[in-house]
View 1: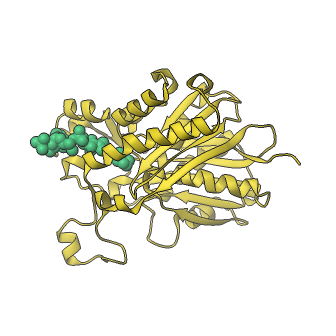
View 2 (view 1 turned 180 degrees about the horizontal axis):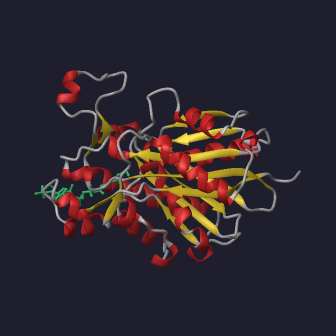
View 3 (view 1 turned 30 degrees about the horizontal axis):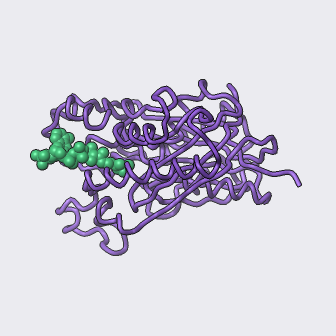
Length: 330
Ligand code: UT7
C-alpha cells in the first residue's frame, strides 16, 4: 500500500501595514529600545486597525496562498483556523473564512492552543489527509494580539504583534510531507499565562473591565524558563526519534516569542544561526501566525525535500515539535 503523507502545497502570509516601533512604545510605557532588543530581539511589530478582526488577516493570507496555488474553493474539504483571538467567542472564525472564500463544501472549526496552535493544527490536518478521507485542508494561523494586549503593561505590550499565515495540506505519495510530531500540554502552566476574564468562568462585567482583566496576563520569567526547556526538549525528541542529526536539517522553524528562547533551542539542537528561521525583529510574537509567517518569509530559500523541524511553546502550557519534508520549490 502506498504511504499517504500530508504536504504543504502552498503558503501565504500577511501582516497589517501599520507598524509599532520600539521608539513608539518608549512614548507609551517606561521602556527603551535597548531593553526590548536585548531581552527579546524585537524591533517592531505590525498592528491591525480597529474594526477589523483575525479573519481579515486570514483572508489576506489566503489571497496570497491562492495566488501561489490557484484552487477552486469548492474543493476545500476542511478549514482549521488556529487562533487565540477569534473574531467572536462563537461562531468559529473558520466558518466566517469559509463563507468569505466560497468554500461551500467544507466544514471548519477553530483550534485553540495559544502559541502552539498552528503546530497542533498541522498535526490534526495531517492526520485528516493521511486517513484518506480528506484531500484538501486549509490550515490557517491568525491572531490580532493587539486586541488583548494592555498597552499600559510594559512587560507584555512590547512582545506581541498581529499577523496571519495560511497553507494547504494535500496528499503526497512522493515521500515528502509531514512525518512525525511530539506534542504535549500541561494545565499547571495556566496561572502564568492567561486572560483572567471573558470566558464562562468570569464573564465580562463592569468590574472585569475596570480591573483590566480582558488583557494578556503573563509571568514572563516563569514562562521563559519553561519555554527554553520544553521547546528544546521537544526538538531533541523529534530529532532522536527520526534519527536526524543537525547536518540533516535544512531549517529549524521556531515559534517567535523571544530570540533568546530561539537561540537556546537552536544551540541545544546543534543548529547554526543560518539554519534557524528568524523574523521576530520585524513582527514580534504573532502567536498562531509565527510558524506560517516564517515559512512565508523563507519560502524562496526552501527546496523540495528539505528537512524542517517546527517547534513551539505557548500558554496552557502547550508545546511540541514536528518533522516534515518540504514539498515545493519556488
Ligand atoms: O509565546 C508565548 C510564550 N511566551 C513567551 O515565551 C515569553 C517568555 N518570556 C519572555 O520572553 C521574557 O520573560 C520577557 C521578555 C517577557 C521579560 O524578560 P525577562 O528578561 O524575563 O525580564 P523579567 O520579567 O525578569 O524582568 C526583569 C526586569 C524587571 O525589573 P526589576 O524587577 O528587575 O526591577 C521588570 O520590571 O525588567 C523589567 N521590565 C522592563 N524594563 C524595561 C519588564 N519589562 C520591561 C520593559 N522595559 N518592557
